[in-house]
Amino acid sequence: MHEYSIVGALIAEVEAEARRRGASRVHRVQVRLGERSGVEIELLREAYALFREGSICATAPLEIEPIPARWGCPECGLLLREGAPLRCAPCARPATMLQGDEILLQRLHLEVA
Amino acid sequence: MCETCGCGDPEIIPVDVRTHILSENERRADHNRQHFVESQVLAINLMGSPGSGKTALLEATAASGSAGLRLVAISGDLATERDALRLREAGIEALSITTGSACHLDAKMVHHALHRLPWQEADLLVVENVGNLVCPAVYDLGEALRVVALSVTEGEDKPLKYPVMFQRADLVLLTKCDLLPHLEFEFEALREALERVMPEPRLISISARTGEGLEAWNEWLQRSRNACREPTRRV
Image 1 (tube, rainbow over the protein chains, first blue to last red):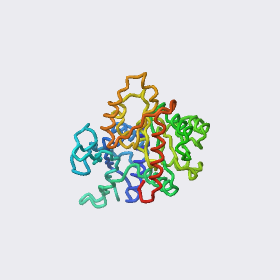
Image 2 (cartoon, chains in turn red, orange):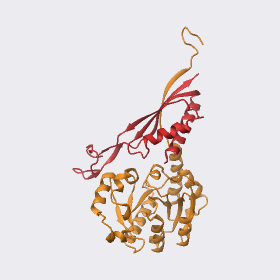
Image 3 (cartoon, chains in turn purple, blue):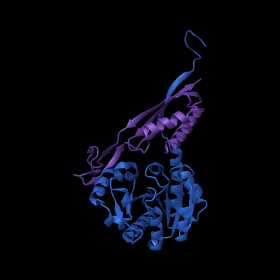
Image 4 (cartoon, helix red, strand yellow):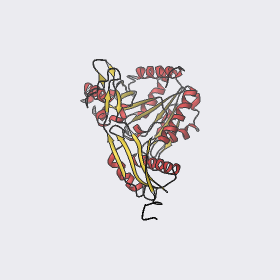
């Protein structure tokens, strides 16, 4: 259950950004989580609800945008269908992940004086 | 506050940040990686379930001569130093990181351990992660390569159940393969599962007990170590 450690890092990032911008409060925290990031949305929500107390995120809702995993051929651009072997058959090339491994602090709504 | 025009009201501004939430760990991992590259030490992050045979694999690797490579190890465990003790008994210079309740190692823990281990004198540093198929996959330690130990008794469907662990692995070791005659293990099903989660599946069947597969594993280590010494190659 590493989501606690992820939330700890998230709040530290938010605090650093708020400090940099001279913000007094955080009104919203927006995060992007890839389907294959290894982080579970529900567990992250639970961890955030616990950890935000007493931090700059105390009253800031967490919005999580899930990003589906997509794999494609680096040669011909063919998009693989979900669950297929991660290989482009015509080009005989291993596929690369186009999206779906994001663990991103995307956007903040900050209150500045 | 002015009620007519709202001047003096706090302003709420959207700020695009777009940073990795674990950017602090990423930074520390890059720092570790730089150390490894400069010292030409091949660093491997060895992961797998509890009981998948990670420690036994390292013991057998040492006993087989580890392709002439000098091996040091860092071993992550929740509560004991048992694994590091076993490794030292096998002749491997080893250090334990006791994580308490943490389910994974991170780059900072590894960095602290590096200060207490003569790793620069080695050719190969193996970080034996906490036994877990989920959490360790998320944390870069600065390693050059990732190896996942999967024992035959865990079942051939594990890659599909834990795709994140396998998708970033450079090699999967199918451990305890001496037990295969006693199991209904479908090798082909494992292959198919790996093809669906790993773009370039590499698999070696290995047994620490009989020594099967150790030669292939040692060759892989030797090749990887040679590759990490070539200055032009990005590790």
